[in-house]
Length: 287
Ligand SMILES: [Zn+2]
Ligand SMILES: [Zn+2]
Image (cartoon, rainbow, N blue to C red):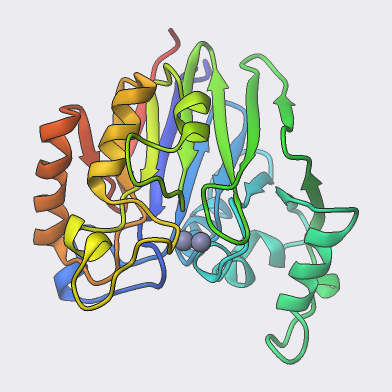
């Protein structure tokens, strides 16, 4: 059987901060951050919010090699809270690689082990049946996944998320590229790190959590919390010269109608903008 050489991107969780299930968010989806990027031979996952739970359930039923690589942007709860319920880690057949910014040897491993220590969770990290490897990435890492359709993941550690920083990822396969830039903030024109790192990409997946009012005023001013408004996301896309912008990491308090309204706001600045929703799939044919 001939393999499909396209790069596929599927959204499993599109919320920031915390999950928000319910009828008012059913169209966009209520799960926290998780995106799958798949080539003919490799399955990569970006972030492990609650969206990864449904993805895990799906993965263990798919044909193909029981192998997956999970890339964490950072360790805030909304990006790791689904990892403990990710089906492949409970299966001895599966090989799971987990990557994230590792400040010194073993630090990512230590933090994940703490997350699965008895006070927080009944199953310890070391007890998981899967073959699990945890890799701390350097600030400018580059990984190559070989085969007939090689795929490259470039990681770029940025200070665009206050206090802890965040890993930006750029995935390239057959001349097409997708940039994953969640949890980033820059009041005007896009964050320099994101604009440079995303230059010319086919798809930019960008934090778009707030409205202008939420960011600049209102009863709770959210400037400095580490997130973008949709306007900032659109400015970043324009400055980086990407082909398409996907608004991501939606605020859990924004219902379906509000996310659709914000999508229109983004389009006034960058016409090729779309709001991510659960189940949304992009297919990038080789260039
Ligand atoms: Zn987040
Ligand atoms: Zn965060």
